Image (cartoon, rainbow, N blue to C red; front, top):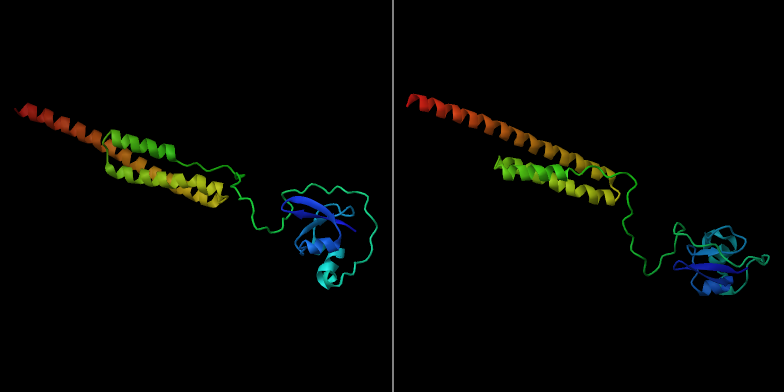
Length: 194
């Protein structure tokens, strides 16, 4: 019986078992013939396994005879079928994750940075906002790698630091207002004394 061989993702053949052995057939090679519904590893095909295991390649004895095939077109090789190892393989690109990406909190951190810089508020509010930006920036890369737990962890950390920055900003605004009112009251009291 003749078999088609999957060679670097392409179907070649048909070949006799002797020709397959000459082409470097091994147990992991993908093969197909008309008696099979889909591609299989050569080690899982009894006729070819006997060639691989008993050394028919050295003796030249054919395996047990099988009826001739009527179908000569092999099924299409699908990417999900296991491929034999080759010297060169296409690079594996990041696949989009199936779960939605957690919130990055970058917008909030940027707004907090701008507000604190423009209003000349507490410099301590800038540090947590920058830390929130760093963690928020990591969310997307973890998500694209498929590490959803890591993305969620970075999102949670970014949220915490953004809240800390917001709290410092709000406290700074309240203290500034209190100081302005107090300073105004002191100035009015001083004017009354003069």
